[in-house]
Length: 369
Image (cartoon, rainbow, N blue to C red; front, top):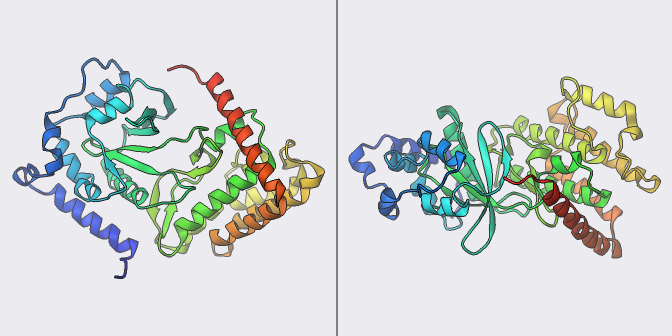
């Protein structure tokens, strides 16, 4: 049987979500047989976490709104997804050790906790505290997109808690943080590993842009590229349905900036961050922009070729930019030239050594929470 287009799936999900939200209290009372016992659960009062009280004051754990939130957050649909676990409030509390475990990322609207499942699997628990109604639907849709995506270079959504105003998401844990922190730090970061990361990210975006999965990333940046304990890149951040070529070309442009960050170790912004200004800056400065750690004479040619790929991604005419599948193929060819035979085995060993070194350095510099 032919699979439906993702646009059709999104519309159906939106219609279902709207219908659930409009149900009266009598119908809402039958929201989920799985969740009948959840209404009586309470979070341990022994938790003195500031985050817990902040969430509680916002009504994130209100049993009164739980059925409504579950419906609004597409709970009945999510429950039918075999690859996604629906957590209870108590389970989320235990995973985060009463919201007192390590905060591995934080901004004005969310906190990400390092947590542990009952089988000792490490996870990242993303708790949003400031998503308004206008963005609530897109947040839920992004969650649903992640739930059906399986790619080694895209962060895996393991489960969610849907009874809060905004879903709490549980992802696989990326032990080495994000690429931006690595590039800004003083970590040793060989060219082979950087190229490997570029290939992985390009393949992830090509997968998202493919015909069967026409998705785009809302914010493809080094801050949203996570690295696991082997420095395998994991694309994260919001995902949306692609509606036009210009949507995917935006990801291509963002990837061009990412490539330049990888070979220069400098932030991607320049003046007004327009493609024209960025291209002018890098074309003018040439080799002097390359990170000295990887600018060995023997590697200048491959760095120039990577830079050429980046320049193509940053073309002013969006329609003239290459597709991500082409970008991934070009980078893969460069990787094959850079590392062949025994060098590939050496790169694998080097990756493990560098990953271990970065992990130890991060442990020594991360303040206790």
